[in-house]
Image (cartoon, rainbow, N blue to C red; front, side):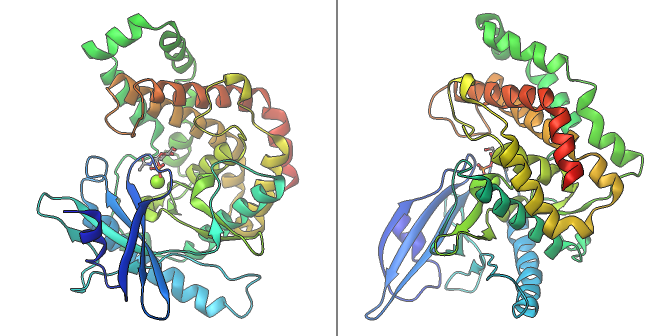
Length: 368
Ligand code: GN1
Ligand code: MG
């Protein structure tokens, strides 16, 4: 079935003009489709869900229905007093009324409204951009703070549980293919040592949760900088997209993920490790924006582990990339075989810089 056929399954007025790839996701495939009528134009986002990663894609759509209903209703109630027009994509149903479309060979497709005249950047532009990214994530946490987590099913059990990723890594690296890769690369061996030195640390959030110091809340799951839209006209953050991983979790996963992403102006795909950085002005901008909106939802215990969370998520993402490299690149999409190795090197370098700047980061967090 062609992309054009799939696009026309969704309930949009007009004739299809074009479908083209958009975004830079590592998991799903994303396209923009444009339809025209005699007097206007409609653009939607259509996505093929990666069934290797999301084994039960219908679960993410059922979750999305409930989450967007909650957020859209709350945004409508608060619209008159809000400091900007906050947005969140809505599901575009199929012509037969269903929320998704499955092709004969089992591909799972869904469509969402496009948030227009706003864009996501792959890397931080300025400290003001970082501030806006913080505002959007803080606002998202605030909007979902009164959502009942039992209304959703976890789309990816074990997602962001760092000790679970370590256990998978331990299994994968015993495989013959992984052992061959490790024997053949001094750089891969260096990453192996890097991981060994941080094993105990990998438990820090899980331990705090097990001890009852942290609670599960609704989180986004993937709030990296290119999932946060900045309005072209006002330069303010307006929406967070990529809602497939929204689920109950620790807000620290989100805080750490967004900060490790916005704090490194070189981005995730840079090849020269000398360009990787954790910029303290970007860090401060992000933290101020986040606390402005989510501050009232945070306990003292939550605040006490924010530094650990950014160090941990950089480590965890590096570990996930490295494991996938050793496993033959089965999870994250790659354009060349070493891409996941390189992504891991970048995140581990970032983790090292975060460690070196611990004192300054804690100081920023104390001030915000
Ligand atoms: C994946 O597909 P994308 O780019 O939205 C991954 C995130 C990682 C991210 C790193 C479901 O997100 O956890 O942080 O790559 N998503 C999933 O770029 O594993
Ligand atoms: Mg994602």
